[in-house]
Image (cartoon, rainbow, N blue to C red):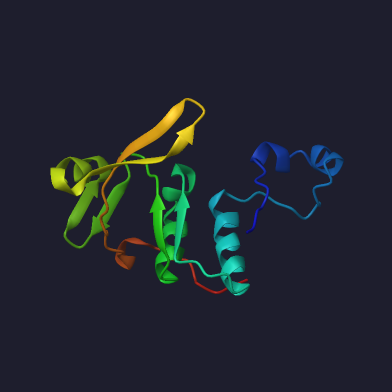
Length: 145
């Protein structure tokens, strides 16, 4: 639906390299999450229906990305590192703690398709974790741009 080229700091700081690759001079560095949020906003502004989003750990650990999806009422499935914390008024937990405490009947083994080395089978459990703006010092806005 949309794409945007990620440029690492080493590229953006090398203006000659950028010019040789036809990267505009005004293009600055952006974390991976910034263009991801922009793409979500552009898709919604264009009228594309989006009920949910999936993302790997690079985006899943970006609370700004997750917060935007929550504000837009878009469900998401994202990978996060096991050290990721879930915060609520009731306390703070690491994701690996929550996984250990999940009941065995919450898990289901599913394939997400074949990969280069065969079937990619994972154990899945769903949990709705509370969004808590108290812990977020600068939440993103949901304006389309």
